[in-house]
Length: 162
Image (cartoon, rainbow, N blue to C red):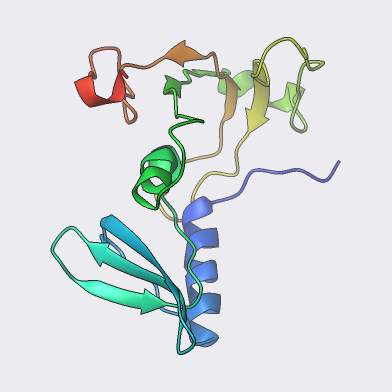
């Protein structure tokens, strides 16, 4: 009764405003290639080095790396496991004339033997950001992907396969 679908672009913009208004800074397109822990009397936190050689020091950090979190963990000295195994989901769209049959999120009874939620019905709100109309999605299935950002069957990235 307390779940819903939101416009994540709008949510992210509001989070960014909260971070900025509280003295934080958001760095976009700052691909971290090295992480060093700062643990001396004068300073604690992290030194982050970007792909272009820029280094910053931070007392607190939030990393939004999603499917690349295992790679960042390794750069920071973490273990090889767990490792991201890319899956992608495909959805069907319920005919607009049938939208009235779905009044909320509908989920199957969870199966503890599989790590997936299962196919479910998801009414969306549409998007202020993209202008997309509301819809009812059915899915996702879970298909092994051959790339971390493999949204189509033909997307393959060899470095993501092992």
